[in-house]
Image (cartoon, rainbow, N blue to C red; front, side):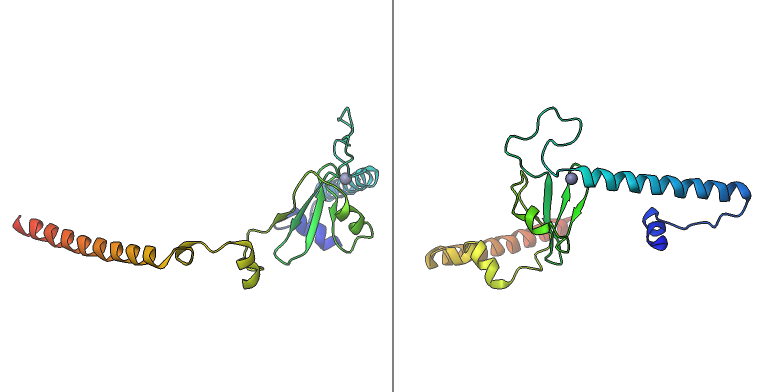
Length: 166
Ligand SMILES: [Zn+2]
């Protein structure tokens, strides 16, 4: 636990040497504990509903949850309350309850497509590109491509001749 919180602060941790440093380290630790406790209290008190933070005048009329859900690369959907920053994971007892609760946010997905199975991908995307075109269209495009290539080659040849003159 001690290691984890040190890592969270990041970087190299210098061991306190002098009396002052030791005192400062102690104070920092106390402050950290206090912040942790405060955060925990806020999260325990938070109803995880929209407009439920102390600065809001009116609660959300639809009682929607203030939780943003996201499907991570590991396929697990986790949420975070936008009021109290509590993280919701499937291991939580109230996870199912909150997953079913209305929110304002749509589930967001990890940017990676690696979790898509091939069949799924086809289901989502209607066939686009060459497959969607009739054969004659594909043939025409193919001819255009060949012509363009020929034209490109001719142009290149002409340019070469031009530059050769100089
Ligand atoms: Zn909350």
